[in-house]
Image (tube, rainbow, N blue to C red):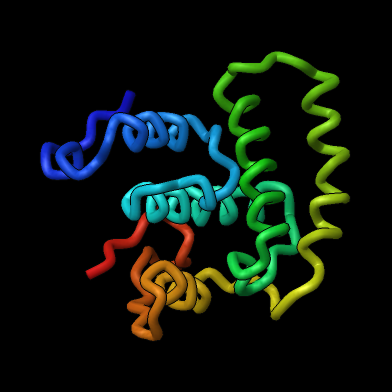
Length: 153
């Protein structure tokens, strides 16, 4: 189980700490069930990194503002969780891996509707605004916008 800092631990219930563990293990596929703001933020930070990785790895046609479409969010979270199980070595199931690869076309179809193609350098600032619920995006992140979690002030 991840060890939160003492300040976070005071603010989080046992239920929240369990959700944090599940989140870190990629077992939470939608932010709806998260009760604590720190958990909600962590979900979105992990998903941004996962989406950037899936986009590069599988050539998925991820669109700008994908986070505004609940179906796209859940599809990308599910695909990231599925892929992570194979990457971690938890699953050694060649037919299952082929199933994942065949599902890419169907997931891609879900992602086609929307805005312009994702540009991580530009869209990271929009994403930060989404996370804060305001229009003060800071564009934090690395040079391509996909290299890690950003610090929000």
